[in-house]
Amino acid sequence: MTRRRDLWALAGVVVLVESVAVRLVNAVAYPPLFGFDAIANWRYIDGLTKDWTLPAPDADWSTAHPPLFYYLAALLVRAARGLCGAEAVGEAAGAVMVRLAVSTVGVAAALWAARAVAQREGGSRRETLVLGALLLVPAHVMLSAMVSEEVLAASLSTVALVLALRALDGADAGTADRRALACGAVAGLAALTKLSGALVVPAAVLAFAAQGLPGAVPGAARRGLRRAALCALAAGLVGGWYYLRNLALYGYFYPQSLSTHAVMLAMPPGERGLADYLWLPLATWTRNSVIDPALLHSVWGGTFATLWFDGHRKFLPLADERVRLAGTAVLALALVPTAAFAAGFVRGLGRALRARSSRDLLLCAHLGLTLAGYALFSWRNPWFATIKGSFLLGTGLPAALYSAQEFERWLARGPRLRRVLLVWAVVWALAVGLVFTWGLVFAKQDFAGVKWTPQLPR
Image (cartoon, rainbow, N blue to C red; front, side):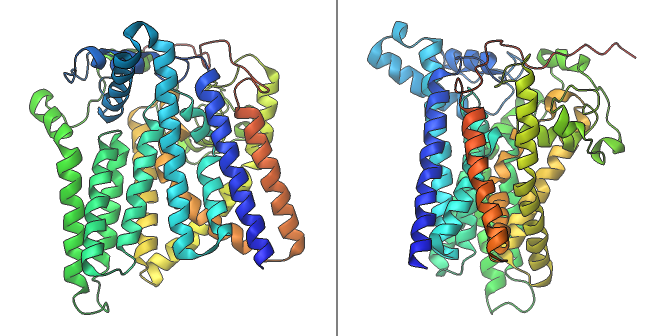
């Protein structure tokens, strides 16, 4: 048993080393302003290094985004320019610095979360599985290489969820209250990075409040409601001001259909129907491009192809048949963690409903709210560009926990299945490293992603 624990601990070190190495290579080697909105994001950051004033949402493509990532990146670049000179820290060096910083935050948050889970739920095996489930997701790897707020937002959501789980653990009242307060504060920072970061708050409030349901220990209702209030108050104070400022100055909490984004109105498909949320075509695996006619109208097919692969071709070469074949292989392998997550989630939902598990209620509520918000967003913005698996990275911790729990059940079913799963894990780690390390097998030279034809007005 001790030897097996040692092997799992060694496997965890391998996962961590690979994750750091891949992100380091990508941060330095991937072209500076390639990737989702990277040019506009850099303009926003560079502008803040000269003028700290928060711009209007319609001033540029990215200025409608919440500002925390951009201010932190500008602070980093401005400090570097103060030390090295403005000429030494242009867009190339600045982009590398920002990407290295974001990658560091992403890895650190995943490592801390995996350690926190292992301390409570036991063992190096659970820690390794959670760490791998957080860091070896292709969307997380690719977005770490881009000048983007996605990984920071996901990391803050992960930290906030860990704090909420710890507050639910039954520590002394003062400690639990402080953790609930910290959860709200970090969730507020997540909301200041991306609107979906705010979804931790209602999930945590629900879980805290549910601790006082009938049958709970005396005083639990009061303590649960107090922690729910502390969490919501901290989140509102830290992150709510930005959205209230938008309402006061521009008449909306969050910008929608701004003139600066008018080009999206011409993107296909241009409309969504119920079938778009029910259809998962074979093209998800065989074509794996969000613009492919067979995949264009499948929300979850496109999401699968962009979470587990580069369905937008923003990281991998556009005109390379080997990329499509690699996508087929990677997406086929991705069926294993997807199935593990689905089975683990169903079990967790059952515990939340039957056993009134506040931990599972937190995780399931966050998953449900995020998926519902994503579905609504894609309905109101019916364009292929809004189908991105990276939008779901904030659910990384619940997905990793449920995947790891189910994977452990499978490992316990017998030596034959255990060998198959361990071979899959090795192949998966190799596939992610080979395909998503820039320049190792694929090196994107073309700036553009998938090519699309504008939709004619109806």
